Image (cartoon, rainbow, N blue to C red; front, side, top):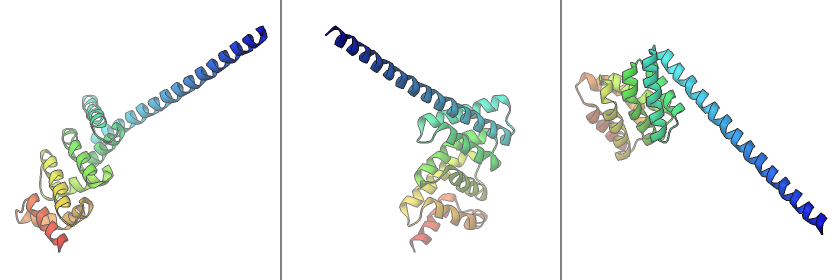
Length: 188
């Protein structure tokens, strides 16, 4: 009987150690994932800063914008950093990138698009329609509304704008009117 109690005690200690090893392994895995995610984020922000020609102060502002987007949207901070990179490649200044980022994320969500495509659609339309970066939210809202109200989607509307926007801008037709006209054509 005494040996049975000793065996049960040893068995409980063994189970406890096994659980401790499992918990330790899970904690280590979580830490490794966290470190990798942080490293990926830092790398992405360094890329954005490089493409943008950002100062260290501007790099910190880019990182803060990406972190905020990662905390408040369906996208991660790394993905928000990728969107900033696409905006930098489109020639946007650091300030313009930060101001435009929420519109790109919103358009990507509304159109079920990846961030590169959403950024491309938005920046191309804005450039063609001669809209400043401060009008990014307006342009994203127009695309989302027009695609919801007509027989087109954000991607198709973006494609149509690549052809029509220079003419629309030349005729002083607003982005709202242009999206409406293209939506009517899509309905027909």
